[in-house]
Length: 87
Image: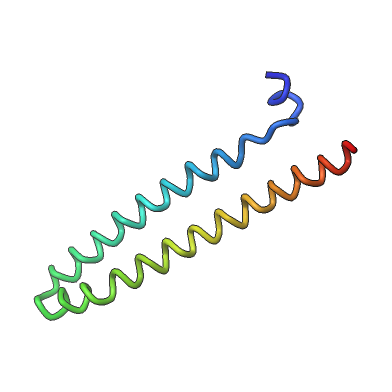
């Protein structure tokens, strides 16, 4: 408990991991919604969305991963600097 009160332990990396999983779920739902919109506009638009949506979803997932990894790296750098300061 003392670690949390005095900011000796960081809980944000755990929160970032949770946020990453939430982002992936939102991306998957968004992809399904985009497929639904594509097919609601006609067969041709639906077939085009079958080609485009997986690429868009993969790019969104990659961007979410990169963003979360950058945030985690910042916290790892903080931990490394605190270890160096402690020596």
